[in-house]
Length: 257
Image (cartoon, rainbow, N blue to C red):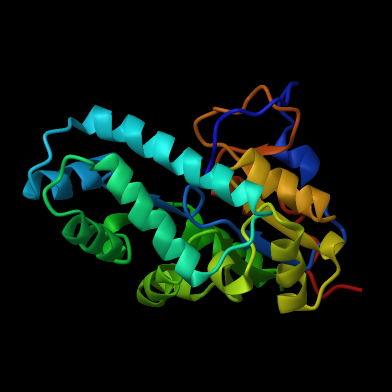
């Protein structure tokens, strides 16, 4: 999930120029903001639940409060060195719900409803290019996985969405013990596929957690930026997931020697 406030500058690198990864044997995608997107938006979902429990906040007020509460929790994790656990993830989301819907009559009920909501396939929109992109990458002999700062609800979600179910391995930060951009997260990713970092391409929408985290770990990386929010960054960007498979050299397979 992308965060604001980065200091990069420069012009976009064309993905075609970046798509010469002779050593890449595996591609990992971030989840939220890259291959899945909340629909309705998080603010709308919070507003719907909040109103059932007496909240009078507007959707825009909730959007602003959610962004502030989420940033606050990210800063807390940063100060802890990005260490995380299942208990910490529950605490994170319970705290966010409480800070966003502070005028609701029953915060426990709000948390329970929202926690369940975001575990369901009906709460998410799959990127339309994903199925074809996965088919193309796997046809090239590449391992294609999912690696996310989401919690164990992602496993339930992935099991019920065919395109996501095909992604393997699936790494969840709360199970790994580290959130992106921690080095420990990317080390676990390498261990999961028994590959050197340089043999892995990571694709995600967050400049810090996904792109910079992967690059610091020695991986190849692409920043997924479909709306051009990070056009000023001097990093290789991907505007469509489909561009990844279409730009991959057709003559090479991951198993070629």
